Length: 419
RNA sequence: GCGAUCAUAGCUCAGUUGGUUAGAGCGCCGGUUUGUGGUACCGGAGGUCACGGGUUCGAACCCCGUUGGUCGCCCCA
Image 1 (cartoon, rainbow, N blue to C red):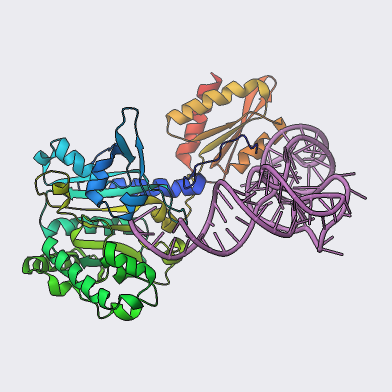
Image 2 (tube, helix red, strand yellow; image 1 turned 45 degrees about the vertical axis):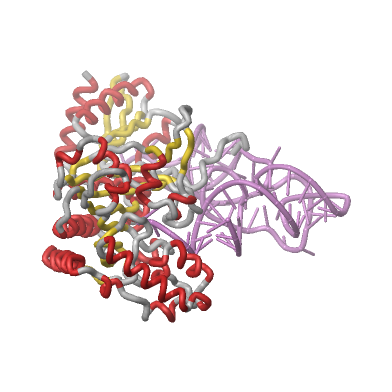
């Protein structure tokens, strides 16, 4: 490769072949399932004013403070390539009058951008599927959303992933718990890992997630959210869990599960591969394939009226890794032109077959003698060879399967082509 | 932001202790063979050994730097 050829941007991917098929399978399955739950398709801008994300996610979060692709446009306005979907959808809910549709169920998918060190299952341009319910305060919304996520994973053929569920309580519960955690960990700060000492100031909830052996001894006795939940918050969570049971969604309680972004309240969840499973191995160190929760406080941070909402997003690349490589669809017909003057017969025939929804490849270049072999290597259901007999086109048909309908279609196409 | 590791043909990889003109398989192109045939054989194209310095009589190989890939920490989907 010439050194003049520009290299791809770090953390971007060119997805091809079986991997691209897996990617498409995830998106197609999501589209099918979201229709079953009547989530409406929306298309969102890839960039927004920077403040949309800064105010939604929280200025101190890693995503906002060091991972956003922000730039000034030619008018001098600070814009940001979206690092997630929720903030933009919330903005649209407020600016486009979507309140009139509340409770509104929407779904979308597309590229997101975060400036991170790439590694397995983590890219700078990555892709998510996303589902949100806006304007629904009831636990039933959480249940339906999770039931959809669960069904999606099952329909993708992923069975070794489990819903880990927690509640962060309402705003007051969350703050009280947070304060108690800070008090508890501050007392032993000297024995914590450097990272957790830093978290103590910025994001104390995250200490509960620490994998550092120095932190582990203190985790078990740390204050639990349950002790700080208001009566309403407890009742809400109980309704979610009983709803999940009724919906047949398996879940486990994960008391230390917190979400990184500031806007989460009440229900928080992640679908995580079971330990030692094939999915866990396929994902490497990335554990979450689908995550989300309730974000009742978000609309207010964008200047809107208090509006309850809940949603999730899942990484398409990560789901595709669990789905594994998928074969491209088999070619229906390969036409090998073994007599140069009759290549137009093949073109005409291909057109006829394609109009009838059959996939066709025409092999009419390179060594005449090797064209049949080339066609055979495409592994088609049928090979049609076009040769010459006394100046007239003549055909040979070879098949590896029995398909009378396709067989007839080929003969019809042939008759059509030679006339 | 931190750490580990890697970079040779379009792809997967060999390449001895630093020693002539850098190799294989696959793929691609052509020829021969076969002649309802995915075979076999022969040939061809394709390389500034990631890039830039250094050491040396001599560097794909040793040293330094840069860029990029991969994996992990952090964070997250």
